[in-house]
Length: 119
Image 1 (cartoon, rainbow, N blue to C red):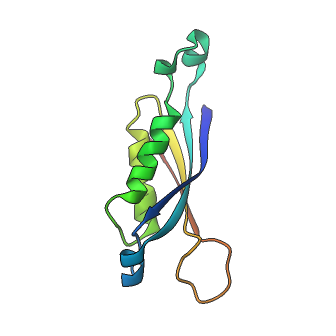
Image 2: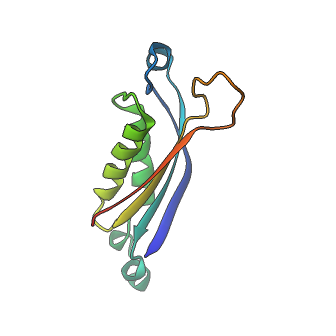
C-alpha cells in the first residue's frame, strides 16, 4: 500500500472538556497518512485515479473547525471517517496534536494517533 501524507494541518477548534476550551478555542494540528494504491494514477498520470490531497486537507480542517467534541479521540475518529470517505483510501492514520492542552506542568505536546481501515 502506498502512502500520501499531510503533516501539520492547523486549525482553530473549540474541543475539550473545560468551559474555557469551548469558549476560547485553541489551535489543533493534524497529521494524516492515507493508504491507497497509487499505481493506476501514476500509470495514466491521472488525478482522478488517486486522492486529491488538497481536498482532503480542506476537509480535515473543516472537521477541526466544526462541531465541538470533548475528546481529541473523538476528533481523530471523525477525521478518520472523513478521510475514508474517499473511494481510493483503504487506510488512514490520524494524529491529532493539542499543544495548548490545559496541563499544569511543562510539556511539548499531547497527541492521539489512531489507524482505521475499510476492513
